Amino acid sequence: MSALITKLTSRKLWMAIAGVATGIFIALGGTASEVTTVAGAVTALVSAATYIITEGKVDAASVSAAVTATQEAVSTIADGTTATDVTSTT
Image (cartoon, rainbow, N blue to C red):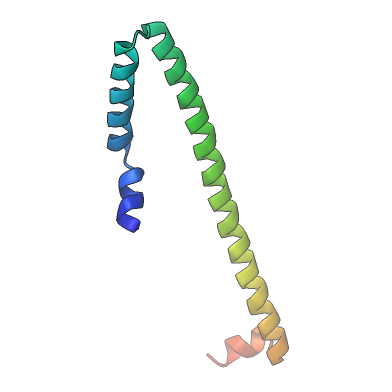
């Protein structure tokens, strides 16, 4: 599954698909102006989607780190130790 995801995220694959799609579009009677318009729209949509997905992953990592820190703090409090107890034993 990982190999498939890697292949689907390959920029070379998407450039090849874009090239084939453009060729087919022009062969079916599309003009250069239409190709430019469609390419611009696709670029804008992909950029926005990529930004949203990336920010979501960053936010998820931040929340995960906060949860881990909170769990460690609660665990430390539940054990009855303090930060000075932990540092003095090492």
